[in-house]
Image (cartoon, rainbow, N blue to C red; front, side, top):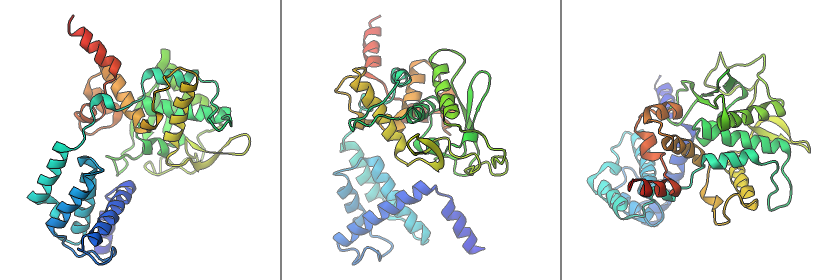
Length: 346
């Protein structure tokens, strides 16, 4: 029973969280050897002295923001907790050092973050081909897949992992919209199958919704008669397969294997690069500043610009706290700020 309890404690964290903690603990272990607290990285004496943790925070502050340092400290705290020891990360000295990093470190303004906008989604929908710098033109199947992934990520406020984890049976079309079921999420490790909507009956929203179904129908994806969604709602359905699978062969046929973890960002950046080549976006636009999270932030920010309240946006983005979309996912564009600067003079 004790071993089972420890296993349940291990599973209480997401796989991505465990990987992140492992990375930061290894980073700290290397630092501990460097400063003489440990002789080898695999044998770090516990509990770690507060001064060592303070030095570690100072060491990280040259390259990382306070939020990232907080993740590193959480990893150290988790290791101490697993051994039944008090964590030095909660000491006054450590907290004051982190606060100092937050006060004096580099701060990104609201307008510094690049997000996907409705105009960009419209550009993606207009694309009839993509030819990267390598010169090898995308297949029509790959282009449809990229359009569908960006549209569903933007319209349904999805995280990268949520896009990757979608199965064919997680999307269903009703008369007025498409329902997207998110099996598990960063803030829903137990898998409550929270659903959200994308698309609508008219206009650009309808075109974005249709892009998802153009991909599904064009790739021959369909719900299997052996679908396991009812029996295991929070688990991947191997019968229906992933909504965004790998493509194989000259004809770019959809397989039953999920695409790579970085594929969303790669496809998104290539779509933007194609828009630049067509002069739809300025050549100064830095596609490397865009990643998969830009879709979720962009969808929420577009809803803010449209006057949608945080309660509705929190429901759409499946945030547990209604303040979260305003505090962390609302990014104002320069055009909006210019309009504001003009409007206030009435």
